[in-house]
Amino acid sequence: MHEDIRCILAQITALEAELKERVHEHEAALAYRIEGRRIEFASDVRAALLRLRTDLLRWLAQSDWRNALSAPFLYALIVPFGLLDLSLTL
Image 1: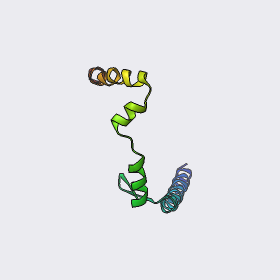
Image 2: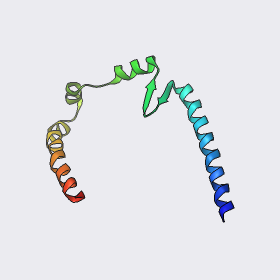
Image 3: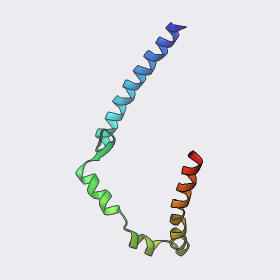
Image 4: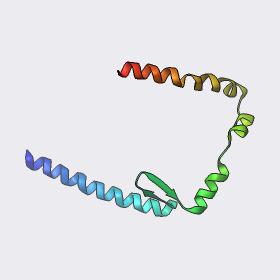
């Protein structure tokens, strides 16, 4: 039984090494790298992402009126639901 567990653990270790190698290959192809808990993009990719970002006023102008009208009510529920979650957790 213990030998089976060791064999499975060896397979898991080998698969983890293969996964890390494949992720590293994709990092090079997609121009990003993982630094701890952060993802660092190449400067040209970062510039493209910043150009595609939409600010709040532009989003409000382009969105459906029902979405813009309901958003304040939905976001106002964050505090009550947070308090409910806290009280249920305790």
